View 1: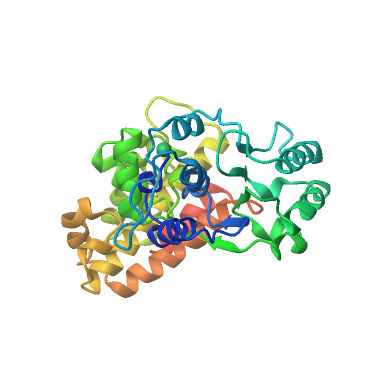
View 2: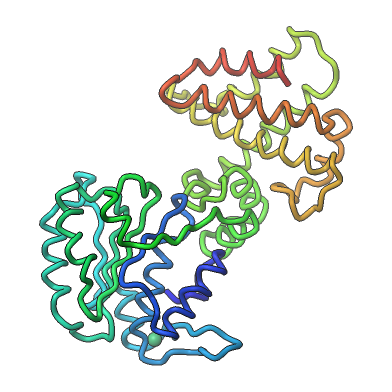
Length: 344
Ligand SMILES: [Zn+2]
């Protein structure tokens, strides 16, 4: 994993490349930001960069990066480099103090085969308090040659004493374009399915991957169909009838209550992206801002009925509906859909 293999986060990649080049990388960093945007991949890229035997680039024009091919890069990639330690939560969902004590002991020695020892603690919010306390001393006086990277989407779960010793690097959400690119290149989505998935993923690749590409496409088709049906003025009975498409089951299958809820949530998220796009269209925004650029024609057609105000209200209602379906409320799908179709 090299820095150039990471999608998005250009300024963080640049910051890190320069810090490594100037040897000013802090001995401890917390990578924070949403789940599924590539924080852990970037931590592994830092490990390669710090240990690569054939560093590329590194002048004023280009930032330095690992080669990705030398013995050290290969060993890190295969997770067998003795100086690059990846700590994860076990089956219990917690990172226990024993795991941290072992790392702390090891960090007291010089790196064995590489230039720098890199300790990556993934989901660092799962460190039990005792484990965080065991880390503290090491973070206070980091041993020469060791770098600690704490990766978490919930930095508030870290003890203040830990946070105060480690500067934060904040990762933002990925752009829709970044996610489309990742889905097509790395996850074999076809372009239309990638657009549908990325539009509803809220900047998180892992969310886009939670659902199969076919489900994303179906969710978006169903959301668009309901918007078409609800476009003209209808009486309440007709509106409620149109809404049934949202809770409709797929052909042939029986669905559990949880599946119905999940399918509906997916369709509503897709509908949210369509409303967002309708706002873009009605404010004559750039096509590049669309979450569903492949549906531009359909969006232009729908925008005749859904002006900016209606689309804005629609987006807010969909958002309320999605939240009502989620814990802790678990509102009834039918009640939510009936309410929603009368709002749109
Ligand atoms: Zn290398």
